[in-house]
Image 1 (spheres, rainbow, N blue to C red):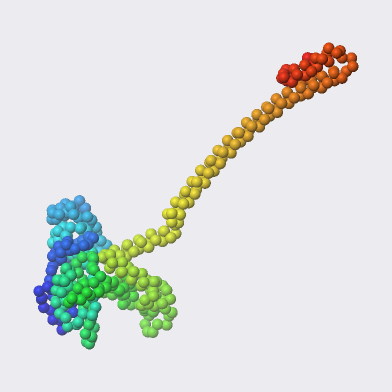
Image 2: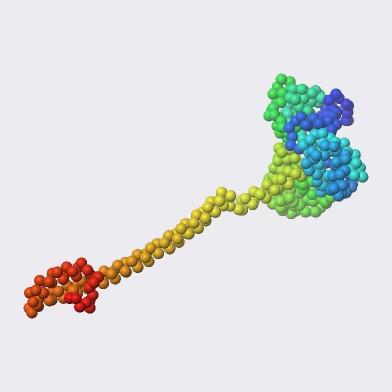
Length: 388
C-alpha cells in the first residue's frame, strides 16, 4: 500500500520514488544558475478537452506586454498542433512570469515547463535498497552541487536483491561522468529512453492510452480472431517480421530519435522533426555531387573554356601571320623573278654578241662593262629593253 509522507527535501513514496518539494517556479529560477539552452513554457486551456482560440497576434502581443514586464526576453511564440501556445525564452524570470499566468486573454489556462529542455537524467547503479531516498538525494545535492528533481528506484515487486539502479533527474543540461556519494566516485550512465509501443495497433508513434484504433495482430498486422495463420508482416515498416521485432528498421529509427532527444534535451516531437530534416538533407547530399566535386567541375569547365578561347585566338593570330608571310613570300618571289629573268636575258644577249664574228673590237671591249651595269642595276633591265 502506498505510504506517502512529506520529507525535508521532497516527497517519498515507498522508498521507491522521490520528488522535490520545490514548485516549478523555484526550479526554473534554480535552472538559471545551471547550464541550459532555452526555457519553453507551454500554455494550454484549463479545460483539457478544448484548445486555445487563435487570436489576433497584435492583441496577443498587447496582452503579453501588460502581464509580463520582462516580455522583451520572449524569443518566440507559436501555436502548436495540440491547440496550445509555446513561449521560448532564455530568461528564468520571464519564464516564471509566464508560468504564473492563470488567464490568457479571457480564457482560463494552465501552464507548465518542458522539463527536457532544462534537465538531465542519468542512472547510478548498485545502490542498497534499504537506503532512504531522501538521504540519497541529500548526499547527491551536497557532494556534487546538483539540484535533484526526481529519483526512481528500479526494483521489481517482491524482489530479494540487495542492490538496485536508481534513475535521477537533475537541473541543468550538462552532467559529469561520475558523481561522489559516500566517499565513492560513482560512475553514471546517461538515460536513453526505449521506444514505447502501442499494445493495440503496435505503432511506435503513440501510447496505448491515446490510441483510437482497433486491435490488430502483432504477427501479421491484420484484424482477425484466433491463432494467426498469415505470414509475418510488420505494421510499421511492412517488412517480413512481426511488429515486436527489435531488428525492425522502424524500431531502430525510433531508438535513434530517442537517443537524439535525450542527448540534446528536446522533446520527442522536436527530435522526430529534426531527425527527419537531417535525413532529408543527407539524402539530398547523397543524390547530388559533393560541393568540392561541383567546384572542381566548375573550375575545369571554366579552364577548358578559357583554354579553347586562347587556342582560337592563337590560331587566328597564327593564320594572320601565315597569310602575311605567304603574301610577302609571293611578293619576294615575284620581285626575284622580275630581277633574275632580265639579268639572265641580258647576259645571254651579251654572250651571244661577244661570240658573233662581225662584232667590232670596240663593242667587245664594252661587253664586260655592260655586264657589270646590268648586274648593278637589275631593275632597269627588261626583257624587251633596247639598251642591249
